Length: 137
Image 1 (tube, rainbow, N blue to C red):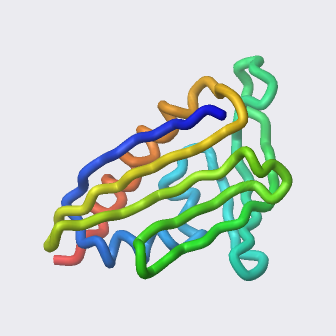
Image 2 (tube, rainbow, N blue to C red):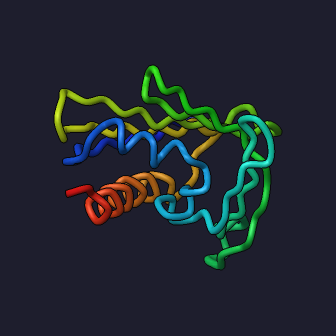
């Protein structure tokens, strides 16, 4: 099992950030590889992504379903593949009050996948940019 982890501190309200990130429809806005996402059942999301599945340098379109759970009490979003239990991830948000929120993103996979660490870092940067641009005030 390979674990990838990234963190980023953002200047945004924890509750507002969680509300935005907990909506599966927003996934394509902050996960660079996801091109579409829609809820198709309780805690079940249909996604389409552009990824290099065969290592040839070309992006292939991949579609599938994932479980997606947002826990309001812990400000944690977890997801995974129903078909591949070794793949799952979590986005946890913690705050110390006010606009100071720490995003902690983790993905566990059965083996090493080139580019995942960069994708996590890019996703956190994308989240920070989006929330800053849509910050109330």
